[in-house]
Image (cartoon, rainbow, N blue to C red; front, side):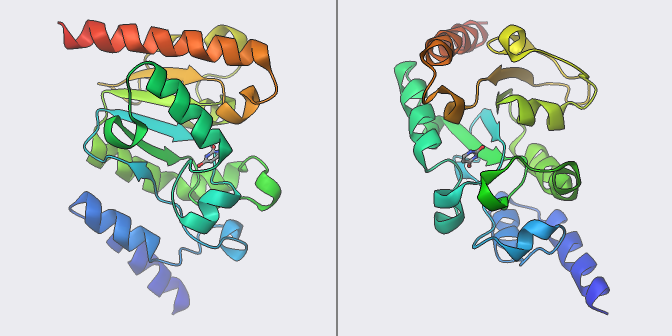
Length: 209
Ligand code: URA
């Protein structure tokens, strides 16, 4: 009986016809699809503008996000906001920000495969509603889960490049270092500012076509 109720609720979230409906239903759902439900405070659906053309996908909510029910509002989010501001992007106005999993993993560990798979229908629904033209992935974990077909890659080579993923036609992808990784690493930080300039140039090129 409980199982049926859960399935009905998930179906209802995935059947949402508007973004607001989806966000509200998921946030209020008490989703039990993976073990992260046991330790979370809130389901963190997103932050930013659902009408934006750029979607940002991080790994998982951290402590601040879990408490505030908003993606990337902690220190990593502030670093990302700053870097995007340097290329003229306001993350709340110009971007829609979410994560591979919507609930905080204990101790901020990376999400596990089963957790990412359990949450995947929600991410797919977000992609279907938002229909982004550009998808920015923050960190190797986001890339690994979005594109399991890309078997092995080095962030040194992949970060800052623009690429396609056949499963998501119509969107250009770019992977950045995770902003939490650049706190204490000035080499990665410098690289991330350079990668932001590549994104800016790409956005400029597509807007003038
Ligand atoms: N790190 C992430 O990957 N996502 C968040 O929302 C916060 C920190």
